[in-house]
Image (tube, rainbow, N blue to C red; front, side):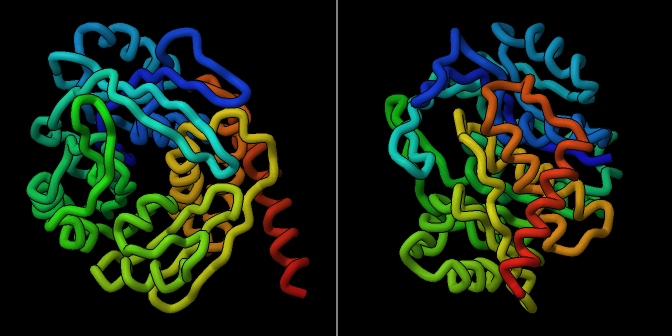
Length: 304
């Protein structure tokens, strides 16, 4: 069993290619579970949801066979996302904040992996410390939600005093390029992404994965750097790209693959997500493996 922790959201999305008709299901932990579920892996999700979206969310998760433990909140989480620029840049404004997640369910403490995918501060150092003390699970972190806050609905990012210690509790951490810059002060598009990975690794995690949108990704375990190419496709909507990359990466990691295979699987899975909008992206294991093999071939040829 792999359990993801983080509030689901229902977002409004605008890109160059699409504009949603109302709010669509998303969220870091949700997209992660969706990706793995479509690859045939049993997942569970822990988070808060408001009465406004509870039945819709329950129906959505049942549709994809995702087990869930939902706590009540005064409202459901959500953002309005507007994409601009050439590298997936976006503006976020708050539609709803579902708040801090309650106590982690005891029935999921025996999960082999627990993945933290917060979207807006719903887990903190104390929460993760408590789980680490009670569970033998490997802990995985997508740090987007521990770096976000808001002021009158406007989202901003900042590194907090507890951030390095929190990251150090985890076995795997996966920041994107914005989060990498907030965490380390290094912009990986113009600076040394490997230096940034080394800096994050020094805080204690076992593996650091930095995703760089159309540039690809870099994996570092303290011994080796592995460069992963992107799967080249038309990104109609980048929402959930990093979430589903982590799903693909963890699919390989759980199966004992090497880091190149894990990263290429992450890139392959993510590519299917960004070609579409919302939870109904047509991912399946055969297509993901086919795209992974094409990336491995590309890597092999570029290293000749």
